[in-house]
Image 1 (cartoon, rainbow, N blue to C red):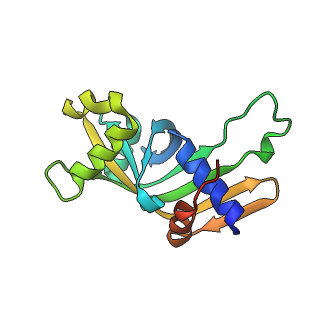
Image 2: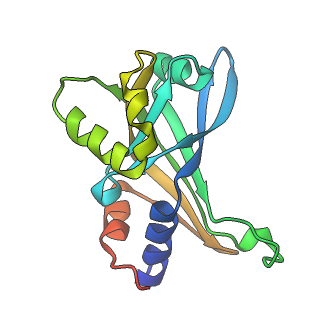
Image 3: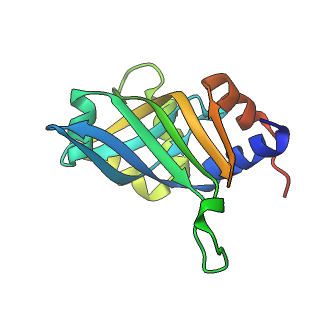
Length: 162
């Protein structure tokens, strides 16, 4: 993957706030839309989820998951196959309040989503850290890459041009 492609990946991940979360539970797959905040170096993605949701119960039973982020489709785009998209596979585990890293993760999430602050006071909400194992990045038609965590880190380090 060249610098242009790494920049496109970084722009895609940083530019979004909403991802499809895929989990598995009760014998069936489930895809849900969730808000996310990315950690520096794309080392992790923070998800603030309610225990009332099936996807949260699925993650608590089995942390293996995937998130998918896509460029926005518009009327000006003739072929949606040209949209950039990334599917990231990994594990999502809850961060526990009072534990190492929790205050920093909470602050990062609240900075990205200031309106989420009151939800941290609700007992049914948990802050998850999704750690990437591998990603599949499609930069456009016939431009697909398998990306490991080190390559995600390299993409995060690319300076995005205006």
